[in-house]
Amino acid sequence: MSDSLKVFFGMIIGATAGVVAGVLIAPTSGKETRERVQDKTVELLEGIKELLSKEAEEKAGEEAK
Image 1 (spheres, rainbow, N blue to C red):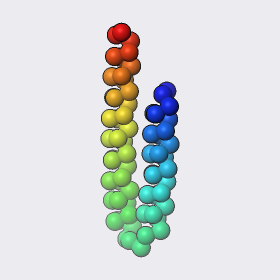
Image 2: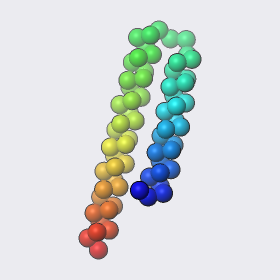
Image 3: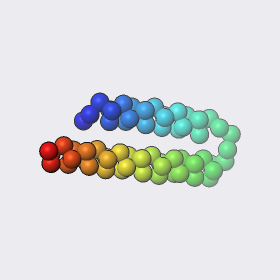
Image 4: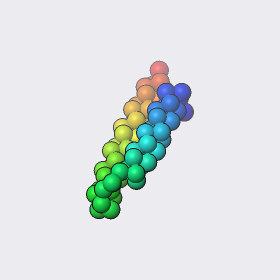
């Protein structure tokens, strides 16, 4: 795993922890909180998929050389 990928995952984990803490502390209803957590989870998974796709493309390009 490349260093940039490690840094990205570290940032994602830190950001996720911050969002979760903020959502749990915020004075909203349970339904709103669950919706916000679900939305952030979907965003996170999409970002990870894009990153892994990009990393796979880079590796394929390096192997082709």
